Amino acid sequence: MSNHSPAAGRSLLYLVVAGAAWGTAGAAASLLFLASDLGPLALSFWRCAGGLVVLLGVLAVRRSRPGRGRARASAVSQSAGSLVVTGLLFTVFQAAYFAAVRETGLAVGTVVTLGAGPVLIALGARHWMGERLGRGGVVAVVGALGGLAVLVLGSGGAEVRPLGVGWALLSAAGYAGMTLRARRLGRLGAGGDPLVTTAWSVAVGAVCLLPLAAAEGLLPHTAELGRVLWLLLYVATVPTALAYALYFTGAAAVRAATVSVIMLIEPVSAAAIAVLVLGERLTGAVVLGTALLLAAVGALIAAESRRPVDRPAGPAGPTGPAAGRPVPQSAVR
Image (tube, helix red, strand yellow):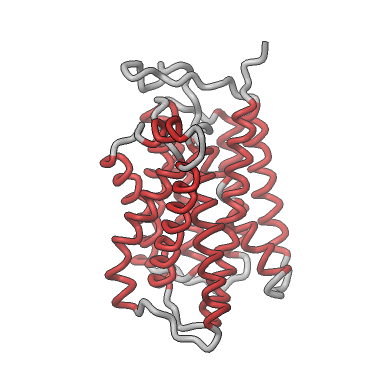
């Protein structure tokens, strides 16, 4: 009998869809900035607040259906304190990224944040969970980071500023902590309900971002109110509520370093939208960077799908490399 779980394939699919959905957030933000005077911090607040409303609605509908007891039992498998910690890591990831973009520009901020994330995650997974990528995995990660650099920096004109790089590294640390935490809880069988985890994350994010967004200007001034509201609804629903629920589901079951590389699909998705929808020019850097990234992601997905099924440790069971079988682990961003 095969030891490979069909659930692993679903988890990988969830992560691919989440990464692609995250990539659409940039295009939606660009359209929002063109249609209104909304700033990045205010947009982040509305993204979190709107995502929370969507998630609470979904949870309310689900609770009213048969089987709600089982969903409730899953939802309480993490304590409120644990969920708040995840929410704080989510908030650091989001807020520090926008600070990096403001200080050193979109290209450098994106490359440092998304590039440092897989490195920090691979080191953390090796140290705390005994997950090894192997030689092929290391080659795939290096190839993915090279593709990311070519894709994002290939157009030139990037300016590196130390303060911005510092913010980007802080953002990467928040992302790494969030991913490693989701993976560790998943290995222990204590990952909880992904919808509840996502709801807590965006709730903490909304509370933390509110004063910053208020200082920046909370309400948009626009002559196209309907368009702005539809774009805000999209950002709250698809790249936030849906994408993060899928992310937390997949990150619990897939090696952390693999998760971080799969999520690099985000800039590929953003580049495709920029060319196909926003009319930007298709350059050789975009083609080469996309090819390198997708090849690396494909290689890691193939390796992950062949990996033996994880055996979650019991409540008193081992939490390190001896827990079942060290599972190499698995995140705009």
